[in-house]
Image (spheres, helix red, strand yellow):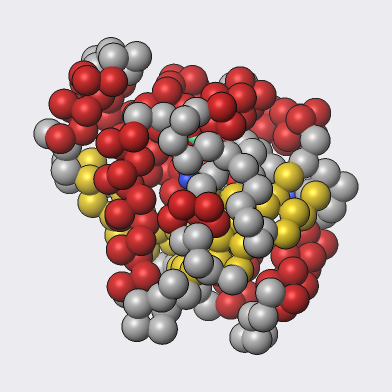
Length: 218
Ligand code: CDP
Ligand code: CDP
């Protein structure tokens, strides 16, 4: 699983289930780097939209991908991402990106490139990584796997409370039905139902799950 004794905590689940929120708190508690793998798929998608690539044409997506320089970093205890030298943040939450990201993320070549970059983080640090396929594909051998879930109503309400236009149900459907690395409960993952938790109690529940999975730190 690890390089240089570094390890990964995998946090997967559907859109707006609370993965980022829980992963950030865990990273703070445990002194790890939080890696937002969704931001990588969003960044590549943002660039495709900037370039006017027809995202429904996989060959065009792959050609644009090959011409792109994707750079992943860390600032404080969070992952960062740049495309062709431009560091991205707010742009990644745009409605246009929400609508397009599942299409781009279904292209196997996109996944191949980004999965390698996700694994590369372990060369430098231990991570809490959140996404859709972290426990199933990126780090299948890690002992620490949580699948964060919440009802569709709760997830849609939480996302709209953030003032974001995001069809979470449509994205989940696309993410769950794609051929490559679909969203699923990875073997060995424990499900954390975040429908009725506060953030604090969800993080406490996540820490408890990690203890049962053998995490001794903290
Ligand atoms: O934050 P939210 O759950 O809304 O989405 P995200 O984690 O930023 O992920 C955005 C999109 O990227 C997802 O809907 C997936 O299509 C894709 N993604 C993926 O395919 N695999 C991952 N490991 C992470 C995200
Ligand atoms: O990363 P993901 O898309 O799974 O979800 P998120 O962006 O971490 O969480 C969606 C929203 O739900 C955020 O505004 C959180 O503050 C809120 N929330 C939560 O994550 N967990 C709770 N128990 C309650 C609210």
